[in-house]
Structures are given as structure tokens and as C-alpha cells.
Length: 280
Ligand SMILES: C[S@@+](CC[C@H](N)C(=O)[O-])C[C@H]1O[C@@H](n2cnc3c(N)ncnc32)[C@H](O)[C@@H]1O
Image (cartoon, rainbow, N blue to C red; front, side, top):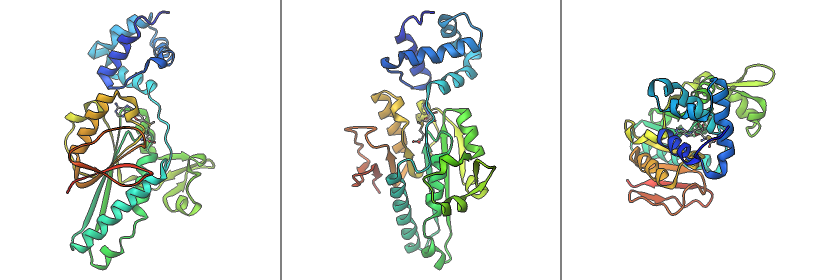
């Protein structure tokens, strides 16, 4: 079966999702398309290509295809240095709020949250902070995390929050028992109070500029920009900056963007992280 022009597929997928399939991934694209063609009992690539442009037919199918084209690999505390930075930034905000005699509310955003390990790691990192300075003054601490991803199946596992023992290997027994309940012989589930801190939403980063603006203290975006062309990465980053509060921090994956700067941001001086702070 012939794929026809690879470029037309590249363009169609980019138009819908922003995702860029580089030419060295042509075989991967063919295999993913073929799987869907067989499952849908279609005659070939051409019929699938035509149908994907029919809005009524394709609205649900796009989710299946994008899911097949993206990798959901993730882990708890995947880049430890970045989580250490989140803790440092949030601890500072707690102290500042206590000094200003005000309650402390921290909002975090996990962009491309996959099956939930990243937003739950953020929640655990926040739970481990000291809120003594606030408590001593009778002030309150609140935090919330929003996790977005394009993939419905990934979000569905994220909401269940059940993980195999193997996935928790980087956590100490003490942290595991503090934040997880045993689900069965092989699995653990994130405790309900931690699950309740995270709101999972389906969203396409390609349309992020149209999304409502909310103010985040920390935007954590790692291993997602790699799917986009350089000019699309810049558009996404600009939309993220608009959603940071003054003083808020944007944390990217090391090496995921080079030679980028933004008039509202200053690079945080941490050689192990790629992070920026919005001017106050
Ligand atoms: C490799 S995972 C990274 C997960 C996590 N951020 C980490 O670093 O471990 C990439 C995630 O980005 C999501 N993704 C890819 N394209 C997207 C898009 N256009 N909009 C939203 N999410 C997208 C995928 O569904 C996948 O779950």
C-alpha cells in the first residue's frame, strides 16, 4: 500500500495538532496510519486522508490518531533538579506571603501532563514544603495544579492515579507510604487528598493562544515542545508567558529551546535547569 506524498500527511497533522512528524519518522507514521486503517476497515491511506478532513467523521478519530503519534513516556520526579527548583520558588513565595501577613495561594500548571506522574510529583513537592511561617501567624496555605494533555486515554489513567510498583522506584518508602495507598500486590494509588489537588483537562497546545488566561505561579512544560516546529514552539511559549503571574516561573526541559528570550522574562541562574522568571 502506498502512502503517497509524505509532505501532505506532515502538513495535515501539523494543521490539526501542531505536531510535526520529521522525515526520519516516515516509517513510524506509516505504521501508525496503517494500524488505524485496518481497525477502521478502510481501503487505504487515500481514503483515510480524505475522511480525516471530514469534520463530522474525523472529530473523534483525530484523538485516536494523535494518541498513536505521540509518546506518553513519563515518570515521577523525571528531572529532579527541576522539582528542586519548584520547591525553592514556592518556599520563597510562602515566606514572602508570611512576611506580608497574607494567605499563600500557589497555582501550578503541568503542560503535557501525560498519565499524571508529573502533576502528582508537583503536588508531593508542594506537600513537602514547610508552612510553619504561615501557621505561626494563623495564615492559610493553598495550592492547586492543572494538568493538560491532548490525549484522552492518558488523562483517563492520570485521573485513576494507579501506578505499578516499578514506577515508584525513585521515591523513598517513607514518601511512598505518605502519599500512596496500596491498590493491589503490584500497584499503588495516589491518596485522595493529593488527587483532589489536580484538575486534569483535555486541551490541544496548538490552540493554546485561544485558551482562557489564568495566572500561574509555576508553569512546568517538559518533553512536549519537542513535538513542534521551532516557530510553533515560540508561539506556544509566548502563550505560556502570558499566563504567568509577575514573578512566576516557567520551567522547560533542558535543551528543549535554544537562543530564545522574551522581553518579560529573565533566565534563572541554575546550570541544571532551563527556567525563566517573569518580571515583577
Ligand atoms: C513524552 S510526554 C511528556 C510527559 C511529561 N511532561 C514528562 O516530561 O514526563 C508528552 C505528552 O505531550 C502530549 N502532547 C503532545 N502533543 C500535544 C498537544 N498538541 N497538546 C497537548 N498535549 C500534547 C502527549 O499526549 C504526551 O502525553
